[in-house]
Amino acid sequence: MAFTIVGTGSALPKRKVTNDDLSEFLDTSDEWISTRTGIKTRYVCTDESLDDLAAEASEHALADAGIEVKDIDLIICSTTSGDHLMPAEACAIAERLGASCPAFDVSAACAGFVFALDTADGWFCRGRARRALVVSAEKMSRLLDWEDRSTCVLFGDGAAAAVVEAGGKSPIWSHLVTKPDVASLDVPGLQGTSPFGSTEDAQPSKLLMKGRKIFHFAVSSIEEELKALEGESGIALSDIDHFVFHQANERILDAVAKRCGIDPSKMAHTIQETGNISSACIPLALDRMSREGSLHAGELVLICGFGAGLDIGTTLIRWNKEQDA
Ligand code: COA
Image 1 (cartoon, helix red, strand yellow):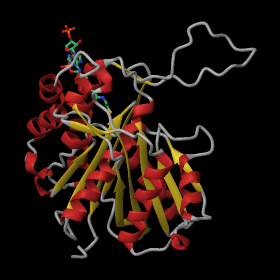
Image 2 (cartoon, helix red, strand yellow):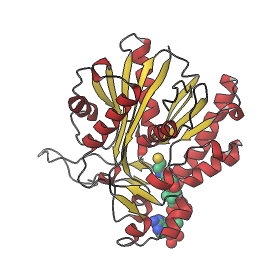
Image 3 (spheres, helix red, strand yellow):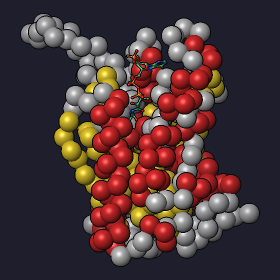
């Protein structure tokens, strides 16, 4: 089976937070954050809910595709930071849009968009859907320990969506991997108030990360995946037009460009502005590139998400959407 991305959309909170804003309440600096991560700003929700952002991104994607919500057969949302533990964020999106198709979430952290796209492709394969809305929506600000300078400076909030249709020329190559390791990047679940539970060893639901370990996992895993892609698909990295990697750290992108011989100008770079918005990074970059007119029909686009799990998902697609302009 195959799929085509026929529309994209995104939405960010209105509050832009600079590194200097963070240094007002944290022992950090623009110099440290910029040189260690490449991040200059990120957007953080104030009065917006994640439901608001996810619905807005979805509406933009539907409008871009020229498709009405009644023509969508499936809604998949990738998130680890939804407004509701139950129901799925996708159900809230369906309610906002007035959709009546099946809607559920996929939890694969920063690789979530790639895993959700693959799930949609599975529904197409089984003939269960012809059109899917794949949304990645993250309110990372609710998961952060705002006193931990080594993590809270890295992340931001936002949502992005893609309308995906059955048929076409993608994926050309796809690979999903999990290298199980919970402790390296973990947000412990809610403790609850069960009278039968034990509160010993209870940890707050705040993000804990072994930054260096994740850095090395990211660089080495991306290199492994790109080698596998070249070996199995017969397509050289030099023939790929755009590389849209998850935006976790500019230095990860630099290391990958160097190790794999990728021209950095072919790589999406949104991290400076948005920070790490987990699974929303990749569809947001695709939406930006599409709207700026830098993606052209027929071009090869590599998307690769990696993060907690430790999950990594890589897909090579052929962009098939003509520019409207
Ligand atoms: N401002 C100032 N100093 C900071 C700081 C901040 N925001 N955060 C950490 N530091 C300090 C540390 O306390 C440490 O000080 P010390 O040497 O006195 O102990 C020093 O900077 C170096 O810390 P370290 O953690 O070794 O830095 P690093 O070069 O590994 O960079 C990360 C840290 C988190 C930026 C980097 O490891 C990283 O990006 N990892 C990947 C994380 C990631 O991508 N996660 C999401 C995956 S989806």
